[in-house]
Image (cartoon, rainbow, N blue to C red):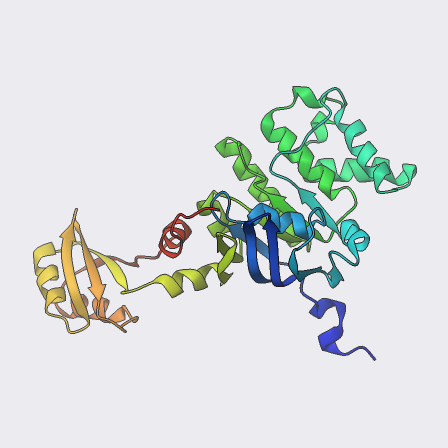
Length: 320
């Protein structure tokens, strides 16, 4: 009987151990230990030259590690590369398209490459076009499609063989705001369908709302890997709270400046910025202080770090 620890469901989608890649004298990846769980929508964050693309290309079996190992759904990317290729879909940041082909011809060609039977390919092509919102473009020439539609077509191509893991390198690169929003909505739907997705991107505000877990990499070294909220909590120093009252702001300010849990309070454009004392994370005492003092509280909001601020704090802007 197969133990729970060794069951397919218990095997991570991606696991790298001491993963290292050298290009001559340059080290693109240095002892990367990374785990991506099944079902994750995982954001891979780093500056240009940080090692993101190298990592994705190793996972996609296009590069071999100089040292260490990488496994995809339990398969070693070197020793069992062919099995890996059948269970992943890899979308590079720049990919070529056959501009004189029709959309359906293009997808049918790649379906044939994956040895999908001809009778099944027609249904498969129709299904992936519907999933990425290109049903009405199935007879169009690829060269006539917008950049956003070509990106969606690239996503349809990597979905043609129904892979379990998607490796997407900057899938929203060069897209206008509407096209980016539509692309992110498609990725969320794919996660709901059970796909595991690793996405590298510079658009950190979108990763914050899209991904459940992230990794930050700089100069080939992993700086952080975990939940989106976890990295913000790790970087947070003193808790900052924003307060707004419908009564006298100056009176409220004096109450807070005299409160034991507050180290700093200042008026900023009609609101009050409050810095809590070190170790104080319960902001309810701020509300209690104001209400007991007769102030009418209309806003109490903790100032949360966004992913862009976290990224700037934990990285130094260094590249290879």
